[in-house]
Length: 158
Image 1 (tube, one colour):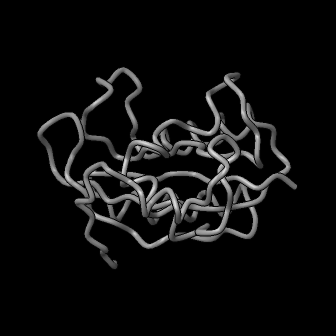
Image 2: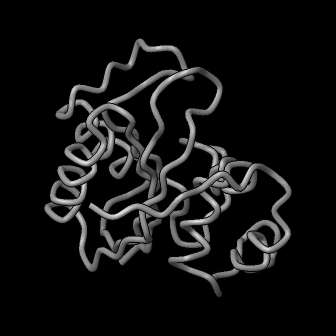
């Protein structure tokens, strides 16, 4: 079984779409765990705040199959692929880690946002504080402790 970590985000009816995402992920993957959910300002554009979390799960799927599954779930929730990179969205699910794989194909793993976005690193450090990053060879808790970017995060429950 492959251990995967996913980032989830939404700023259009976020509670509805994140609940749907969790239910849909449970249909495709096993042993799902979720970090706390954080509210963060929109990044790169003006818009409503996002709700973000990180999910860990297990799967027999390949990287390519996981990506296809995630895209299908996004589309089911009205995700428009022709949108600008920084824009409001119903649901965004990204593969952050696939085991300890370091690759550039079919996507870059570990995903670069881990190192530069608080809304990815903080929930990842909550969920897997002692997991060692396969590139930097330090734990995600240590990475969060030394994070120099914006820490504008607020824990939310719904």
